[in-house]
Amino acid sequence: MTDINEWLKVDALDLEAQGVARNSEGKVVFIEGALPGETVRVKTGRRKNNWEQGELIEIGRESAQRVTPGCPNFGLHAGACGGCKMQHFHAAAQVAVKQRTLEDNLWHLGKVRPERVMRPIEGPTWGYRYRARLSVRHVVKKGTVLVGFHERKSRYIADMSECRILPPHISAMLLPLRTLVMSMDARDTLPQIELALGESPEGLVNALVLRHLEPLGEADLQRLRDFAAQHRVQWWLQPKGPDTVHLLDAGEGAGPQLAYTLPEFGVTMPFKPTDFTQVNHHINRVLVARALKLLDAQPDERVIDWFCGLGNFTLPIATQVREVLGIEGSEALVQRSRENAVVNRRDNATFAARNLFELSAQDLAAYGSAARWLVDPPREGAFALAKALAEVRQNPIAGYEPPARIVYVSCNPSTLARDAGLLMHQAGYRCAAAGVVNMFPHTAHVESIAVFERIDGWTLPAPVEAEPQEGAASEGAAPETGEPA
Image (cartoon, rainbow, N blue to C red; front, side, top):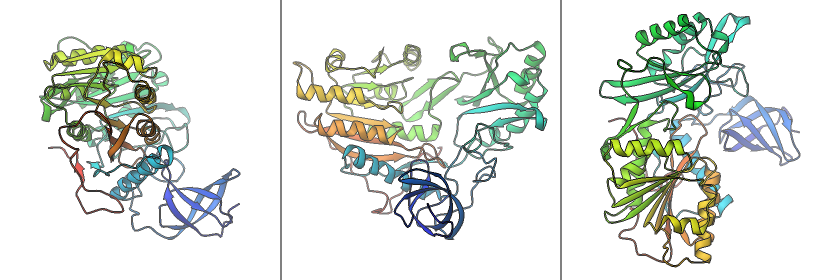
């Protein structure tokens, strides 16, 4: 057990943004709030055979990258918000750690080293969150309603009056929302408000989805209407599952439709407030542009976009190629993507629904050859897809050609590493490049993008454009940014 007077040297951060050190016995100690390079004293909490959880007591030598958190709700104190874990760490250092996390996962889990490390995609570090799920609770003992994120390591809701990662006008709405819910007759049966921001010619569209466990009375409905008029929001009601979501007042005068734009490709993406869209719209624009540049699809080629969702990548790809097929597991999302193709007049984009966690080599052949793939799976990754490619390499299928290039967008470095190992060691690909996408500043979430090129087979028109490396061997190149135009 770590002695309370023992000074520990913090060597790294883990995936939960905890400092990692070793005590005098050689046991790993995880320390929330500690940063690499610091010397700290801790009080031992949870203990296992080969690791301990340490509570930070004192910092001896402070990291030069330690900064004052930008939000009053952040910290290790009781009641602190659990939404962010890295506000005490300089924003640039956060990105460097995420890059190292990606590289470590690729090597330790997949035995993969990318030939090039791409410069990170970065953008605004505050006010970036255009989607959020806010918990709501009427706390009778306190005589108030709380609206916000959960406390650190707790089921309780943090007592928040502002949130710096939300857009300022939404942050300023937290206290009025508390007052609104407190005034409602149904205050005890309203567990959640989901936020979705979109774009329209008139400006931002602010949609709030109110989850209610019991039918709302007319007085409460009028309170919602009054709030909407005062704060310029759209209220959507969700009495049960996501498929029950509907506008409070549909028809004429309901307000503009939610959408986001990808101006570089002339694409507008209408969506519903419960549809999956990226949290950070600024970064998403840059991510789509980077992914398509890496894909380097040619006008006469056919492309497949696996896990296509609403068509976030599919429709921009359609502006550059002869044909693109988007494949998604959800029938509802496939229908929405088809509607978006019509909105954008992209008749060269087709869509299909199927379970993408169960795929064989024959399934790949049934969808036909495509010069390039875009793969954007959920946290579970694309293991079945990578495994099916490995099967094709071991037992080639007459008339079927695997893709020459794969661009893989990941929200989980460990499943990316697993799939990358399969692609490299069994499916006949090399990892040409990889880099991080800072979609969620101040959190430990690591989003990334990797490029795989087939070793045997087709000759590509052009190699992936070389980009300077970032991190320990940085050449000082500026990151690719998602700053709003």
